[in-house]
Length: 344
Image 1 (cartoon, rainbow, N blue to C red):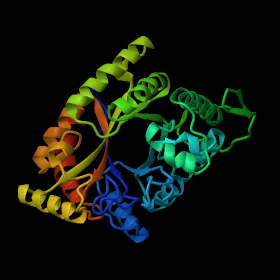
Image 2: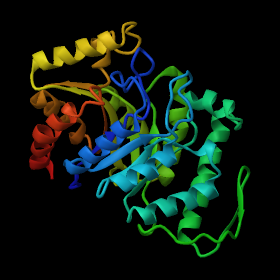
Image 3: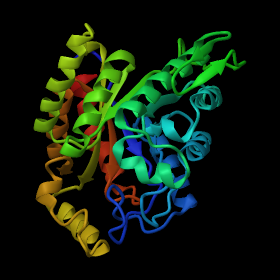
């Protein structure tokens, strides 16, 4: 592994997943701003590096979810030191020139703590995009939109005055001050999806954008063997662009179930299953384990080391016992120090 600091991220549960509503947050039964406020405060006092907030307008059902950008701005005032970013900030929901302005503002008010993770509107977002009245074009066209958006955002972040005329977007010398605090600009994060037939074409196209523009590559929950295969695919794209794959920072999003011991883990699983009686997302723990991580601290350390040895330096964790802080606390006390001792 290259000599890079490990970054442990906490995904804030801004939508309830209980009663078989959604994956990621099986023990969250309602939206409670006071609970979320407390979680941000707790994580800020621990040794986590970053906090991550989903960017969706709806969850394709009646599950409530807070809007991502306003929530991130709110959280940035609670946290005093954590870096903050969105999980797949959807380009289709805001004009890129406005995105550039909003993120410049966020970078200023957070004193340079913003991570910019932009998404082109992956296939799973079609319903929310169209139901809110936005266009959802073909995969190829959405990738074109994403590429144009990145160009515009970088121009507005770095140039005194710039124009851009594209197929989908244009700007005419907009005045945009202040510029971001981070120089030359906040690093660009772009993500691919867990491999499946439905997203195979999308992933191949997004790999091209990652090779051309990304400082960071993130992938949604993926087991270690599948991650190795995905790395092989994206490396081929990097080779075709004559870019060294080692110049890319690597990140993985994972659901995590951590307990003090096996009995503790069994207890948490039982509570999750009782809170989600249909078992739509968490009935088959063996299958869940193929793409996520569970165990006592020593097992978690062993599993995460496999990703780190493949170059992963950022983890975005959804703690399945949230809104309880117990899992994050165990991770903070027993996993983070050991992995930092080994790798940092």
